[in-house]
Image (cartoon, rainbow, N blue to C red; front, side):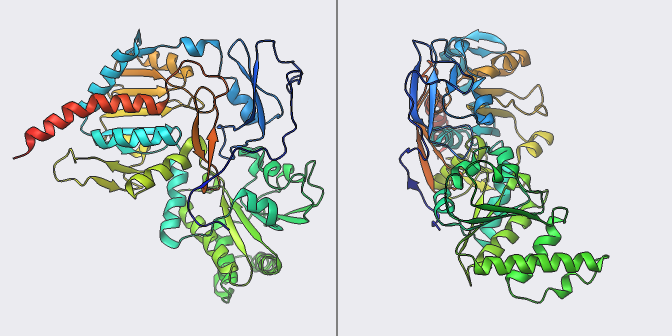
Length: 482
């Protein structure tokens, strides 16, 4: 297991089959004469950050994966084409140059007592620059996947946890437990990255759900897959399992269950499972925070962490949370480095609102949906540099919106019309380099641009906005001093 920290990783393929210019894509089309191929490319569209890929940049500015049929990657690549480089900034639906858009955006931010920075789909450099910008205008920071991220953070704050990495799963784990999730649904290459092609005998147990069909695919011949308690309530299951892992008598927890036979079957299944954990060389408990039922997912994650910790008293075990999509894990880590607090924090240096602190963390109060529903923010900066998620429909028309987004959002921003500034930005690993945290939270992967359309990065735009804000804010702060 890895301690929490940052481990720089070189981009190395795990199973890369070398390609050459004559290699065909999964669709059977050969690269065009003007195409260029980037090998050992790291895909940014999923937190697995697969780094064994070859990506083709064609002369029409489209992109094609050369050695994978990952549906998530293939769908993401459909959003890139020749029109991206020609996409212009806009104000209230009218095309303008970048400087004009920046000036209007800076005016909005400097005039808003309580702005919100939402979505935050960006890389490390973008997150660093956005944090500085947020400090200059007193903004609240929340990610598009803030609910799942906050649930995991709350559980970590309350009880701590044991982390593991993809490499340790692949090299050491002989027992993998999947609680309420089928990883390939969200992360199609999970089993490719962790068990495919290995000869280690492994047992895969799916708890509270049916087995993932991908776990029995090609390259997994040494794997035995089963499902237990597929229809059980997750809260009841974890309550009982926790007592078993803690070596406490579980009888009091099932006395009130209507069906005593079902309770006995559940108890027997979980006792047998814990015995397998005790006998295993290395157990990994895999779960997806976003797939756990709300609004109390943090309680489930806390119970999972507790089971892993208790299991370490007799054996070795680690947890692997599958999440952090669209840069969520990256931004959360970066904001935590810079402020000491995770996402859903308001930052301000100096504090712009009298009587407030420079840093205020509240995972409930600073939830994007609640802030918009209660009209507690007066400007929204929406950052979407990967796939193009649009801003929430709950955003009132009279609240100014600044979009630093994928060019595919340009038309929607124009359709909103008044009170809208749109600035197209580069996607990390497509039109700019960068760094992202991998799903296992301790590995930072470098990104290489596959295409390089003439689009600025989120970090570049945020830095320009910060520079525009700095002088007037500094002057007004100086005037306010006695």
